[in-house]
Length: 310
Image 1: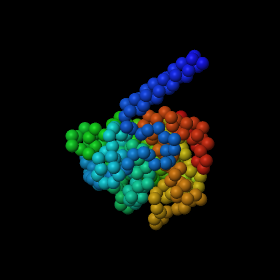
Image 2 (image 1 turned 120 degrees about the horizontal axis):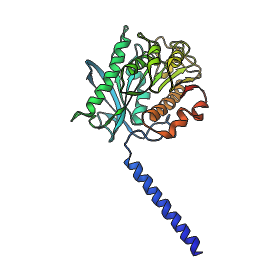
Image 3 (image 1 turned 180 degrees about the vertical axis):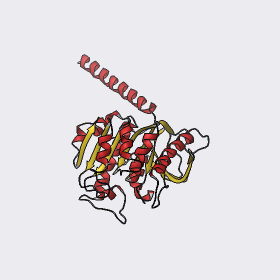
């Protein structure tokens, strides 16, 4: 009886010690994105934003920055810690407000996202847009080291990534091919650009993800994302949402948009899960999400066709 009691007490003490050790380890981690069970669901952080002018690398443009805040809303302080940085490119003739759902989602998981308003006219320069995206990352890096900046000491400049939709996705690939500081890229219905995003993909050695919709009639998978994926050396993956459509990656459809066989809500939920787990794993260092990115969970995700070169 006494022996059983002593063994039970020892086991309890060991369990408490292990719990305290784990808690201390968790407290000592940087406040980069945390492990996620369901990355399609909102993250735990409040979402804030600020509108400003980005000036960096000889470029200047208006932008909105979404970021994890100490409170939700405009111009709130940035949540403590060092957060990965992203630059996101809009589609052809599309305003950045078309992407608020996905951008706010990334911020809720701990990413600081610069969204340029540049190259929004009828005759955009894809090359200039790529440079604008890189300027956004350069600007974040500079702000991180600038005393008095809202973003001083809050950007992990070793973890920078790129994303974008359609033209912006192609521009993100061009930008990644020009910027050694970029560590990961994920694109939504990326469209071929001039210069070629397909050719740029072939030069990338960082992880690159291509997400498309099988019902896309604007930048269809076969003529755009499949060619980019084929050109890209490992590690890379192509995720095709069954029934997904080009404008389903946006919050609403405008003139010239297509339609798919699934709802916008279903497509966006799938997109959030696929891309957030990607960035949490490749930029946030969350090893617990490897299965959702490269493993059986990714390969067997309902409604999404998976191809990969790990």
